[in-house]
Every structure is written in C-alpha cells, then in structure tokens.
Length: 334
Ligand SMILES: Cc1cc2nc3c(=O)[nH]c(=O)nc-3n(C[C@H](O)[C@H](O)[C@H](O)COP(=O)(O)O)c2cc1C
Image (tube, rainbow, N blue to C red; front, side, top):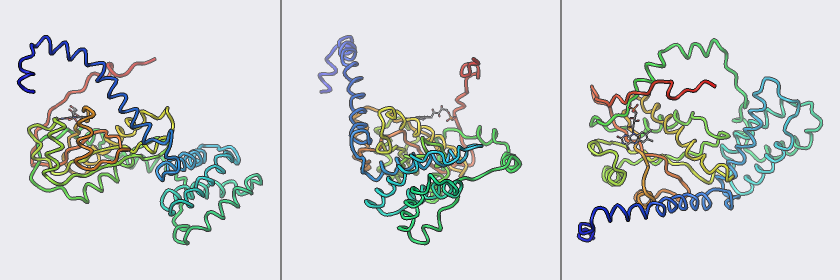
C-alpha cells in the first residue's frame, strides 16, 4: 500500500483527495445522524431509564423554575404536574426509586405546599400522596425544599476574592510532575464541574477516567494532540454526553453545547483542585472514534466531546500564553 501511495504523483493524490472530500463530509454527518437516531430517544428508547429520567427532569424543572419566579401564577402548570406524576409512576413501575424520583418529589412537595389551598389541585395532590407513600420514610425525609434563596450580602461575600486572578491563572498544562493524581481529587473535581448548567438540568455528562498508562498511551496516540507530553499524563479523562437524554430532533446539537460547558467547568475545577490539565480535541475521523470506543468500551450512546490530560503540577510550569483577541472582535453592540 505504501509503495502504491509513493508511486502516485502528488497532483493525482490532490485530485483524489478533492474528489473524496464530499463523500467523507457526508459520511461523517451520516454517522453522527445515525448515532443520534439510534441512541437518542427521538424514535425509540422511550421507556429507557435515561429517557424517563430526562422527561421527569424536564417537568420537575418546569415546576421548580416556575416556583422560583418573583410572582408565580396561582396553581400554575396543572397539566405539567399531572404528566410528571404519570411519568414518576411509570418510572417506579419499571425501576427502583432513586435521585430521579427524589428530586422530582422535592419540586412537587414545594409546589403543593405553596398552593395548598388550590381546589383544582385536589386530584393530583392525592395522586402525589399515593406516589410518595411508595417511598421509604428515609427517602421521604430526604426530599428538601426545591427553592433556595441567596441574599446580595452573602453573594458579595463569596465574591470577596480575586476571581479574575484565579480564572486567568488557568492554562493548558503540557508538562506534569511524577506525582500520581488521586481518584478522590478526580471525583471532587467532577462533582464541582457538575455545577455546570445544562438544558433542563438534565446533566447528561459521562466521564471515563483512564488510569492505566498503556491505555492512556493508546488513546493519546490515536488522538495525536499530546505529542511531547503524553507519557507524563497520569489520568486521562474521556468526556462524553449520553444521547438517550435527548428526545427531540431540535436537540440534536445539544450534546455539544452541554458537553462543552461541562468541559470548561471541569478544566476550571481541576485547576481549583491544584491539578494541571490540558483539553485534547476529539476532532477525529469516525474510524478513530470507533477505535477509542473499543479501547475503553465506551457505550454507543455516549457522544465523545473531548479528552482531558491530567497530572500533578511541578514547582514551576511553562505554559503557552495563547493571547486572547481584543474584545471588539467578539462583542457587537446592537
Ligand atoms: C476542545 C479543545 C481541544 C483542544 N485540543 C488540544 C490538543 O489536542 N492538544 C493541545 O495541546 N491543546 C489542545 N487544546 C488547548 C488549547 O490549545 C488551549 O486551550 C488554547 O490555546 C488556550 O490556551 P489556555 O487553555 O492555556 O488558556 C484544546 C482546547 C480545547 C478547548
């Protein structure tokens, strides 16, 4: 093959490459579309745990955000409440009660407490009480008020540090110490990163943490963006998004948005935990994507966003300045 490649003149290679481009282009789009059709909940998977979870999250979030308004309409959203109770019923028929149900219970409890005098809510309230009775006393006790408050003074106190200094001190780190990174620090960083916003609070993120040196090298080799520092990486985080959390055609790109926001949140959390990190792009061909999926058994329904190389920081670390453009290039006043 190598010999044949070497014998083909450069201009012919260029011509073949040009002719192939549209096919490659449509091929990758086709594969992305196929993955979305197969693993999202648009056409199927309606009864899948992840899908029911996201449908429950959408409805309970409608209620909690309605309650968080300055002046919620009295007994608003009865249809949403009824639909939510039906979904929760279905969930409890198929699966065990877990945080999905407890979060929704919290929203509904706050809702019924707030509108306790609404006669039109009598029927859904009875259904809610019945549903709650299926939970253990500990689970019932765990549910807390879905609405929190924060005051300006307290908020100002949290700003009493130089955020700009902290934020601007994060750099992509491409040299690491030999100190191993503990799993606890990775977990703490992920918990922090999960404060990232996501559509309807669906939190569709999935992170695969690779610790084995050989596997890290395999993944880095096919990714290609960590040449020169791959062997220093102590943990490699593969960031993905679960497509089954999405159920509309209009949500087909949401995984990249929610995934991207989470990625930044993760980078800043790792930085806050005193670790060095470098995001590594997943701008790869579908065959490389498939290779990675095989290496660490990534679920077909998880769209891959990026990798993150993580390691300990040395006493001093070099970094590429990567200067930012002037703000006028980004901001347009209209
Ligand atoms: C999605 C994404 C993919 C990236 N991929 C790579 C990569 O493959 N290799 C690399 O060395 N840096 C990579 N980077 C790091 C960027 O080069 C870096 O974020 C940018 O230059 C800004 O510098 P800073 O992160 O130090 O602020 C990537 C960054 C992002 C956000």
